[in-house]
Image 1 (cartoon, rainbow, N blue to C red):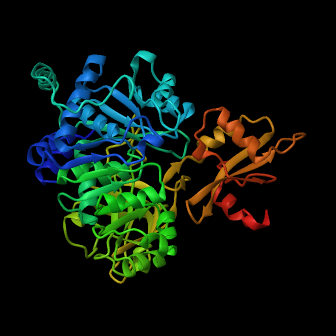
Image 2 (cartoon, rainbow, N blue to C red; image 1 turned 60 degrees about the vertical axis):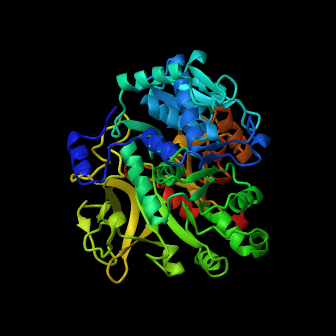
Image 3 (cartoon, rainbow, N blue to C red; image 1 turned 120 degrees about the vertical axis):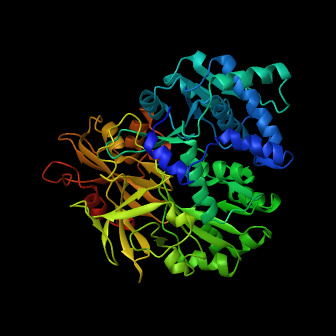
Length: 559
């Protein structure tokens, strides 16, 4: 399935920004050039929280294992163009699965392990999933069984039970079967390879189709901006289900021949132990973890990290003091990363913005009108700012408006949705983020807020409208709306603002959470605060003004 127009493909290909290789093509190249180098590595305590012992695969073994899994998929009936939901934590089998589906031309739709029946059934209807792949044991939960709300039991593939990993080269007859299948179903670098998910302001999940070329373009921005080198060892602690891990690790690693070491979920001693024992060169970490490590030098200095060059972070504001500590005391460079599944890609690197105070809050205005930046990372990605009311482009220091993006990293539109309001008339993606242009040469963006009502809880994007809709079914509530409130560790958390129905007793926070959990809502979306109001603030059209709800919340210590 292709989403990009032939005109777009031709323009980006002729400019050298898109190529002709898929994910599995690069794997085959690396397996030939560096067969014995490690490619995929589990964390050492995997068996404590997931089925199976820790696995370490070389590029050759990864190629063999994905050949075997691809053939297993064919024998089960999975084929070219099939839409496959995947729910697995960061284990080596997940990486093998991506490569196997790439070899078949199937479409991978990864799901966070936190997603439950409500999310999975909703997304499956949008995706029209044909298959569900799940790990049989993650913290005692059989993730494969979650697929029963999406597909039939015959369409569930159970990794770790029915589908063990095979790392030996396939027998010649089997390899020939796979080769013949791929010859009958050739995969193009502009075919859609993934449909990841991002929450919408309407409560309807949005599927983000992305091709191999889009992912490699995003990976190129990450690798260039974060200064990856061929053969680097990279530690990925973020779930391999969206931009952070796919664009940050999976795609750039196979293109450059880097080792990907997996970690999940965050366990600080294990994480630091991996940085030391695996000789990590680069990793990413949430701001809360970096703040903790900056304030606890004893913990940091109890390990040795001679090979660690840099750490990327984002999803919440960075602390200038944290950056100064890491670079001044620990000798590790900090990269501020701003991205999205749709293809936003900005990186504040030490060489680009040396001042920690500026780097914590500012991003280079890549491709913007009159911006002074040079180099591939800045010229391949185009950005501009439009006035919120008129839609006209604004520029110059102090101008504010909606950030818009164009270029090889950007997707073509949401799955099954019209693109009228998503892109500007000249093809720029409207991010919904409010930015201010700043700097003496108008060379920076400062993220000033969001035009959209998305709540960003530690990097997990949550649609408040989705939670509103579920809570509206509570008998004790006349009105309800959730809003964000600030949190030092996660950036934002969720508050439920309720209007109690006449004659009813106000439910407790625990009551509301139990009500939502019963409907299958994922735990990370549950409110962590409750505020009773007489009425919800609305505009003349009846839309709830969430920013007014957030602004009116009393200090936590006052409740």
